[in-house]
Length: 99
Image (cartoon, rainbow, N blue to C red; front, side, top):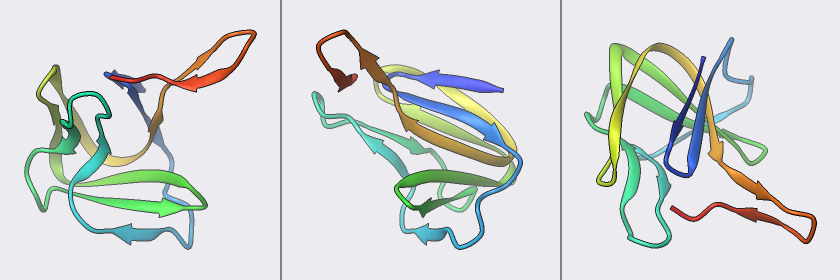
């Protein structure tokens, strides 16, 4: 399963890679234009991990909501997910989409 939440993508994964390190907080990504953030609404319902520049979230509660001031919330069921910034591909360049 895959979700788009503004300029980030979230996809279910079988597991978080071994050696991934826990990151503090509940923010998945900061918006560059508005300063708003994509984040887990309720602290303690999920943990964020990083491994080799790739980011993951593990939902510990039965569900966790991803929120952002400019987008509808997404409810993720318990499980492991990878998240990343969406990219824009053109013949001239590869650019990160700005939300």
